[in-house]
Amino acid sequence: MEHYLILARSVTYAQRMQRVLGRAGIRCQIFRAPRDLTELGCAYAVRVAVNDLSPALIALHREALDPVQVFLFQRGMYREVGP
Image (cartoon, rainbow, N blue to C red; front, side, top):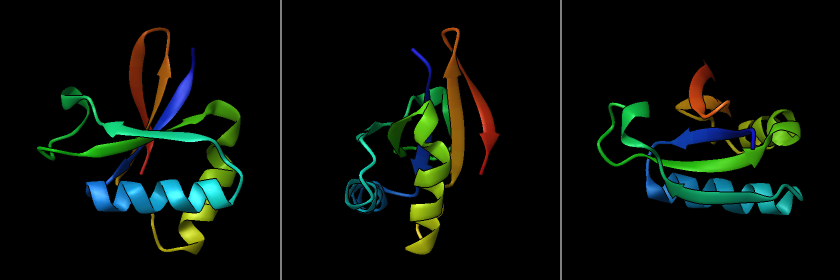
């Protein structure tokens, strides 16, 4: 199943992102980012549906919660698609 991972600076940022997205009506899930995706030791990520990426990034930007990185999960692999 395709989805996007929005990487956060810390667990606190990921929790803030989750609240902002929830208020915007965007379903998401927070969890630890896979180790091979980041050089940050304990990064956290917010997972959103493919159709929700643009509105999610807009909502996060309004709250100054821009992601560290964004990855697309497709065909069993993660691919970086932007910051």
